[in-house]
Image 1 (cartoon, helix red, strand yellow):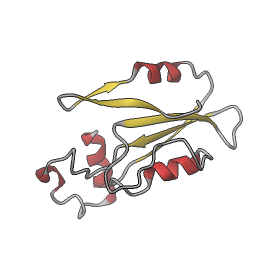
Image 2 (image 1 turned 60 degrees about the vertical axis):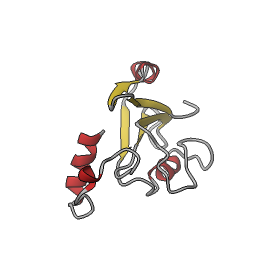
Image 3 (image 1 turned 90 degrees about the horizontal axis):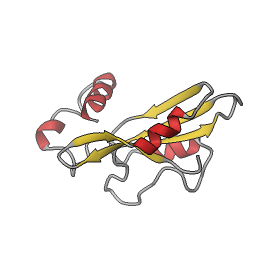
Length: 127
């Protein structure tokens, strides 16, 4: 893939949906895959880190220069594995936790104080 594609989309009414084009890309992969996903608070460098893992300094996962969250949903980028020529690296970049435009005050209460494992669980439930 030359560029990432949205795998899980945010749809109106707080519903999630699978992008069929991205699903078809996954279905066409015939070799073993290595999946790397990243989760965390919004505006903490998740997309930047994924671009580094993909070996791209420019292009790739979208980066923002503001305090507003940039990634919406879950984005996927399939790349050749850098160390295993017969494997595909599937990078998943997720929408960050704590985006004030997406989450109500009550949902965020106490998130900072929770352990990292609880934050990860909360992220999985939220998305």
